Image 1 (cartoon, rainbow, N blue to C red):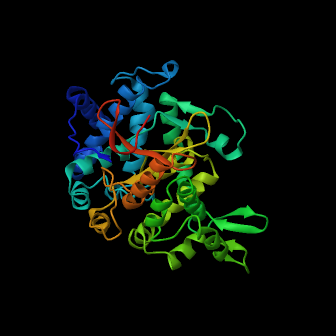
Image 2 (spheres, rainbow, N blue to C red):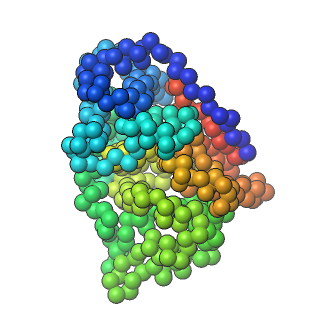
Amino acid sequence: MKEQPPICIVNKNILRDVWMLVEHLKRTPEVLEHPEMYLGFSLKVQQNALDILEGLAHVWRRDIREYCKPNDEIIWKEVIIPYWNYFYTSTPQTGNISQRLTVFPWYNSSLLREMIADENDRIIALRLFWHIPWYIGNLEYGRTRFRVGPDYYWGIEGMKYFIQNMPKLYEEVLRNYPDGLYKFVSDLKSEYRDIYHNWIVDRGMHGLGEGFKQWYGGLDVNNSFYQVHLRSIDNQTMIRRLDKYLLANYDAGIEGYLSRNYRYWDLIKFIHGYGIEYGGWDNEVSFIYYPIAYKAFGIVYYPAVQYDHFINAPAGYAISINGAFFGLPDSLLRPLRDGRYGRVYILPGNGISHITSPLDGILKDYEYGKQNPVEPNFKSIAVDIPGLDIQTIEVFRIGKRD
């Protein structure tokens, strides 16, 4: 197992970022009235600069690279300021003009320091909060499975599309949360949270069975979960409520702890399930709904985890990209760090992942996969987070990564 030593975060482009900070203040002078916003504001400027000025110039597809300058009006008018306005109008300092929830309190430096004591973890969480992806899927294509416009929006257009759809997806989630249902099969309906659990089941059945068992406090994905599905169906209403059944009967693991002790975990599960139903495939790097919807609620999400499992095909293994949630309070993570649920890996930036966090379990899965390198067993797992240049930083790995 490889785990990165503490990350030293040093800004490599201070002059550029100072210029952009001053320019941002000229365009949003209201920040000067709220010094408690400075930490979050300064990290916004730095992350925007990194994503736009460096990220777009080094994307893997050379044909869509864009070379922007700090004083290009389009980046301020179409991306940087609209992004600011969305979150600024949702702060207590403005009386929450937008009436929107922002889970991560970027706007209060003192509160952030109380939530996350370690400076590097705090900075990583803030950077991930402000990160804007350089491409995003077409929401309509994801919903209909038919080609309506481009598959993806790239570069500045992708960032604009991302920001413009945040209010829309926020309202859509609210209309369906918390009691929304979808048609599962025939006359049977199911809660959207159930899809979240089924996603973890899928990973459990592809080489992460012991990790699944630790996550759910002893539940066996191969021998027990089918019966759990059946027992979670209300035969009178024909509604499957898998999440409620699991909380009532299998709450001794990490999942149960987070559900009982973190007020936003239910919302996280709901968006996860809703996002798979409306714009998701077998790989979270292709998911359309997640990045926008989580960002709209100020939930710090990033697809940080690459999991590879063996397959009986010429390639030898399959890759899946999985998300993680960052910026969680120290107080919430303390029992997990203390070993009350076995060894639990907390990602840099106070992050949690249902794929990498159940460390005792995935180490057993790795050993089994090493001895039995056949489908669908564990091959490798790694965590990457954005650095302060265009490269990501590998902060955790088990197994050989090709």
